[in-house]
Length: 190
Length: 190
Image 1 (cartoon, rainbow over the protein chains, first blue to last red):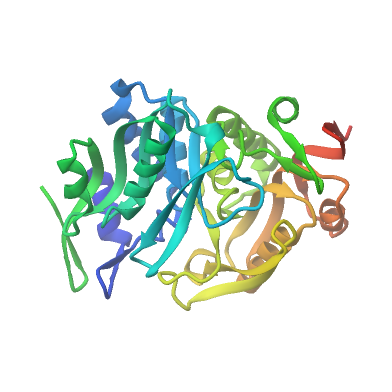
Image 2: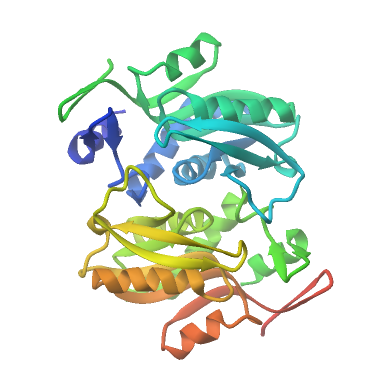
């Protein structure tokens, strides 16, 4: 998606360790017009899938998921990280490894908000190793719900997550796929 | 706001310890049409304030802030809780006490995204003791920015936060103010 690629080139910063910093417009400060357009793009791709729920994980996925859900006219459920006093015990839980932070954390979704009737679209800001997606897929499996696809803003194409998911036959729609990051320059796939 | 009050009566749950659980529609599962309307209501109230930025704190405030920002056509900045590897050291930080969890945590905003030119609207899902708002106000103060008002979805009117803020002359717009919660029943102010 040219709009997103241009924004990454204009405002993204490549940091050591193959980190792409996009907190100018995606995951700390949010460019609301841009993210609304990203939500539209997810809708265009997945609109025929009869999605009933959009699932993401706090915090960076919420705005993206919300923008998409406005088009699909379905609820967002955002999985919570760590223990939450008000969530209770009636939950699906999966342990997730964060490559960014080098730690594991629990991801939790209330059983009230994901059921076997749900056709679920996962949305997240980044796809790298695929750990967060696999964790959400595990939770969808626990609920007996159906995964319809995965919408990602920025995929690090040089890391294995995207290929791993597509090899399972999952429709993964990444709006920008980074082929490589060298020094301060970013090259997109395609 | 009748729409929100009706939703609280229909879907909110009163738990021991004066906890109002609204994770059915506000802070775990999100009723996207409702939250879009709450964003509109914030815009109607604050539209003449020349807001340049909406500030909230992850995670529950993000969808609300995003919905409002779509109307104001300004960026959202969501403050981060705890330490974040990718945020760096160029930050404003304030320690915040969570009455819900009984712990303190750091709230952090990059200096890049809040400056003395900004006229800031704070948006959050709940106002009870006012700790989160005071923390965001502290950060606005560090940035030399100007606080224009505070938009809240649900205020617990029987707790001191709202009165404390209004006594300072701040325009606090709460879309539903709970006067009391007894047993399983909720009474609204006004």
